[in-house]
Length: 553
Image (cartoon, rainbow, N blue to C red; front, side, top):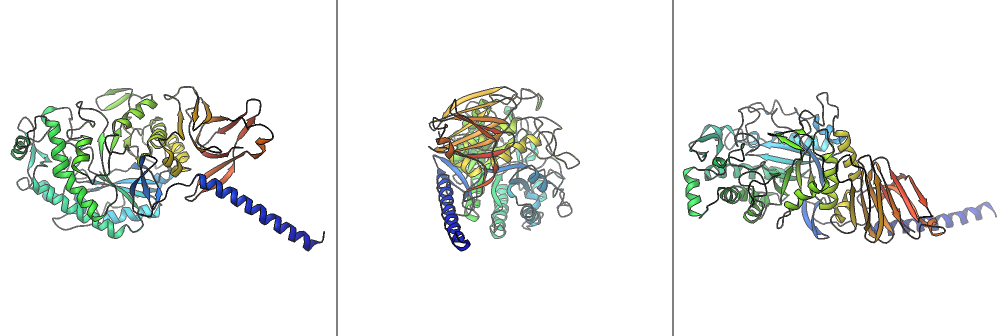
């Protein structure tokens, strides 16, 4: 054959081969096509029976952690502006796509009716520089420690100075013993609610005008809502006993202090804030409640934390997340005995927050030198499609103390490597995982507790799948149709039994390491696998975090 003829033949053959390859790839990607939305703003849509967060038109979950706020001091906000800049690249090294950044009301309204958004703009610029999304935590009121509008008058002051200094215009809450708490404002006073609502409207308007590329994917309103802050199990602190509150309590026919706080805080305070957000810049706005049950009718552990009441009274509230901390044995608020991290405990806390229209989500969880967060993330994302999963905090660990993900020298430490493994694996195929989460086409495989040897066999959409591991590995298996299978995980071996896994059908078997690009799969290398034709089984070894796509014969 002459050279020119051979070239012509080769060209035709190569074109046909490429066309066939493209057809096969297109067919493969068509099976895995995830839903898209024409709305670019962060928002929710119902997919496969569950609410799914979309960002820039694609399914998204905030794989996040939080940064502190106490080094940003009243009167020195401009001077302290860059104090947390090193934490943005640290979050990237941890494998995250989102950072939770607190914004105190006192920062954006240093003087009455004078707004300063320099820190918000700085956070947006740092996020863009590091290719991160942001959740901005609006701290107009803070309830994790004593007091709600301040804990000290430096880095722990949340309301502006004019609110803190003027207890006549902005009355304080009164406990059941008649004691006035100067550090806890009365939310049965219209004066403080009107001021915070006005400031929050200005904040949301600024975001609408400056967040052109949808860096901000959500707003967390306040934190662990309570009336007085600390000592959540003291009945004297279950509600405000100011004159205004006593009148509302009587007029409303309430007999339960906790139920009254839930109504008062949700209807009088959170409702107007969420209405302002929805009218100004309608991105997801959510609350976070603590894990626990104060009373049988309460899901959260703080006075006023009642999921059903908040959902009913604040229809513009996107969801209520849980701050879920796990411990083998508590001593006060510390955890001297590590938790065994049981899978059923993870599921239980998320199921308890599936109330009405609520979307299960995790805004805080263990961040110490344990495997809680890595394991919990697989359950939360794989079974519940949680819109956010965020251990607390990058530089502080809880409930395990002095075990932060980021050490004082700026290096990742303690449990960071294990958490990075988990989010690295999930990130390789996050949109498909979210799409199939909670359906019979996806299954999460992990040992029932930390450190346990584990083997399991189950059917995933008609296909027999087994997992064996003794190194605290885990996997997510998705089987959308008869011939496509995805395995996401690490430190484990997964096997599939299929009667066609023998010669000659096995010649059509394709096993490839992949990552999701946004429009389809990108091949990234060879997978470590073997075929045992005597048992008609395929074995895939996932030594490190990876996603393996299998096209069955």
